[in-house]
Image 1 (cartoon, helix red, strand yellow):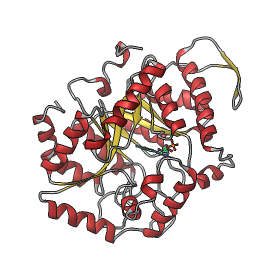
Image 2 (tube, helix red, strand yellow):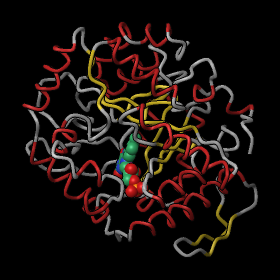
Image 3 (cartoon, helix red, strand yellow):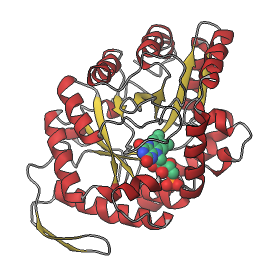
Length: 374
Ligand SMILES: Cc1cc2nc3c(=O)[nH]c(=O)nc-3n(C[C@H](O)[C@H](O)[C@H](O)COP(=O)(O)O)c2cc1C
């Protein structure tokens, strides 16, 4: 496959070459977002607030809104993430409420049937005029899968289920003939799905698997893959290694994204104070619950979980790299990460509305000056 972008995708912010670093918000559909803390915030899970944040992101020129796929909370005083808008319906609502920004759903493979997923995605793609994207997660949170009476499969097998699931979805999106499948995990008889999505060849697919099985799935299937870049100075081999692997093994060039939790203030001291406030308000029980399940069920967080500061890293940003500092310092992190070949970032904030406004006023102009945003 070449870098060729089909005409039906050329309108998408993801393929807009003027913005070298794509930017999106993450987790604005779940209570407490990426912040396991009771520190004061205007953030809440109400429809008006979540729509407001999507419009705010669109107005400041961001490229996408990506939700967390979540079905239950993590306990503790906050029942962290326990209020969670279902993501296909969330995306459908936001598609109607916005005009340019890409809207994603985050789909748990084991609990959504592929025919339903294909059709919901096609419907949202029509509502949005071809701006829909699908983030695929295999489901690492066992109690969540058990809510559905679903089996929590062995880690790598989850990706084999995902492969078969996505193959059905992709064929329903792209093929005109009825589809009969007698697979290892799914079967279908004369399945059809009309209308086809507007996006061609199909809506953008995102995946954040990072274990060997997860990266391989992502390289084979995703249009957007994720790596975790803690330090741009040392991460270049990982970034170029993933891109090389995807191209050499599968002839594919997925965009490579990373996540970050941003705390940006006028001075470093103020940014550190804001971090301290989040940690002081931390819901440590919820963080521990999350970490203990994650340690058993996922293969990708071992290094972070072993760190002494792991609990703090989860409280302030769900263990994502934290970008803490002044607008100049944060802008430099974005430039450094772009320079090593990262194509985009999804961002979390403790107080999205307030901090996006600050980011727009103080960081976006620096990103434009540096030439990574238009
Ligand atoms: C940016 C990002 C977003 C993610 N979103 C979700 C999500 O919404 N729901 C979920 O259950 N897992 C989510 N995950 C976890 C991944 O799906 C995946 O399970 C995790 O990265 C572990 O990778 P592995 O399965 O390759 O071990 C996310 C991970 C990242 C880095």
